[in-house]
Image (cartoon, rainbow, N blue to C red):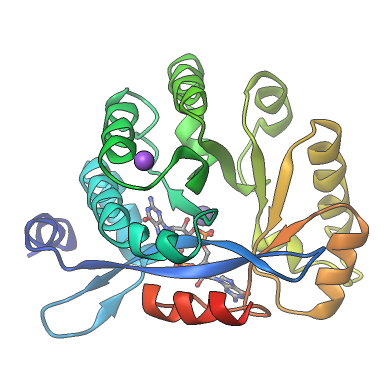
Length: 251
Ligand code: G
Ligand code: G
Ligand code: NA
Ligand code: MN
């Protein structure tokens, strides 16, 4: 069948799992948390990456089900990590429709009420596409932040109308897309863009996480320019929850 129909039956069979990519405080070098990234293990044992199946989940209207699966996995796995590291901050990615209704608010309220997970342990990451219905999504974001969790704009800079909505929208954090981090230290004209994104984030008093950091030179530039958090292969690849526990013990 099509990938969309295979996805539909797989979502019922729990073929999904999470890996975690460490997020580092550049000022201390310590790991403050991680971004949860979903993977799909097929029946034949092969593992599919989200850039293959998230667009299919979005276009076949299954993304809310996938997000629900991810939140179920977080509910199952995070309490173990929090027992040793109670202030850990875990980033969870949302799909484009997840901010268009209050289901996510109710689901997370339930999560917080029946586990040791607290609102300050979660940061929800939404791309600019999730803000299409601006009034609806900003109302959902307001409810989520009122619970005490953080909201981040993911892949920041790759969408459009960034400036106009950022000043109106109450979010906590910008995740600076890897495509901009890649230009740091290059002669490309686009290397100026990352500088302006950082200035914008600072002037709006937002936390910033740089994605896809691969070199010490990039990390130095980011820290010197006021970006305090980073993730990328320089610090760690996405890893299992058990491996993240070992990683935290060492960082
Ligand atoms: O893990 P990887 O770097 O290949 O992720 C690629 C993209 O897929 C990232 O941009 C990320 O935002 C997205 N992604 C990863 N996990 C999830 C998830 O659980 N839900 C959604 N909606 N997107 C995800
Ligand atoms: O959803 P998001 O845009 O955060 O997706 C992050 C994706 O980028 C993941 O699939 C992850 O494996 C990948 N990634 C994370 N760090 C690096 C990095 O330093 N270099 C490269 N090339 N890819 C990275
Ligand atoms: Na709780
Ligand atoms: Mn993300």
